[in-house]
Image 1: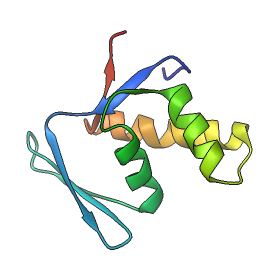
Image 2: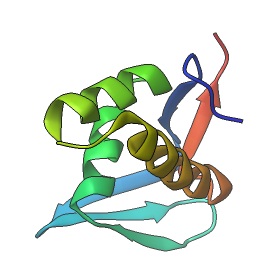
Image 3: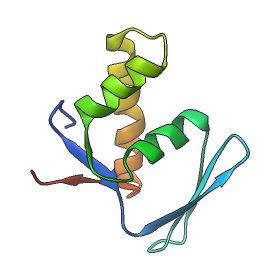
Image 4: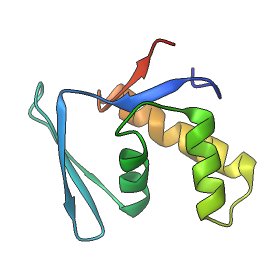
Amino acid sequence: MIELSTLISQSGDVVACELDGGSALLDLKSGDYFRLNQTGSLIWSDITTPATFSDLLNGFINRFDVDQATLDADLKAVLSVMLDKGLVVINPR
């Protein structure tokens, strides 16, 4: 479960490159490719170094005109998929 204090970072098994309007990710363990849209790429960029969910949430609130409840749910949904696919990891505090 992702909470405000959850520390999230990119998996060390994933390499990425920027593409027009997004990013391409390669999971070196599975060989699977993933494409991120611009918003997904911003999330990816924001977790280059470990960041708390709260930091990510506040960063997006400052960038976009969106209410916190909607952003909270959407960001958790994207991060949950990334976590399930092994693209991101939850770090111990």
